[in-house]
Image (spheres, rainbow, N blue to C red):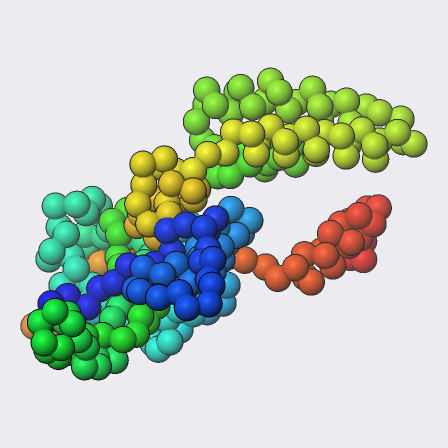
Length: 305
């Protein structure tokens, strides 16, 4: 039996399901189609309509004496639409990680010592579990061996050198609402040439016409942004040809700036300048979004004015 317990979800095709009929013989491929169809549908919905981000939890702290990054339990969705669940408090050994990744780390000299930056990500992982007796082949006299009978979805944590870089989606809508762009000067300039006249037209419209003009600008920007969106890899595997992300589709949990290891009297401790979880993307439930939108629609900033 293969000792590798990593597994791949049978979620390749959200548009093909099983057409069962009376007396039909079902094999492994048929059962994978039954299970994988629903899995693939959920992934397709999550990836395109929600995107990668943290749903709850995943608090981050640095414990000096143990030289560990500690991450609390949490739930997230990655760029391929998979749910990442971390059920228990988990730790990453900073000293061991630095030893293994020193060539990839950019050190800075400070009065306190050499410091570096990193960020924490969660990555989807599926593991095989619950071994049971299994038939190798009816043609081999029904010899039995053990095979895993369950797939368990979880998340693994990784430290990545340098600070994280946020991915910007829907650049025209962001420009229309005055949010920062992609950071690509050429791309942002092109977006500005499209969007800035729409924004100016809405701002200069008569008060009675402004809602309709603004709504038209929103619809145009949304339409053009969705026209530009594409799956990440048309030659991808496991359904990624249909999805906006690509492996490993990590979910950023936060940045650690000014990390350093200090050794005094043979004891090494870890210190961090700042833990910044605002660099992650967070999912907000729809009820709260409706309330925020309603408050934002009130003149002069809503109920807080």
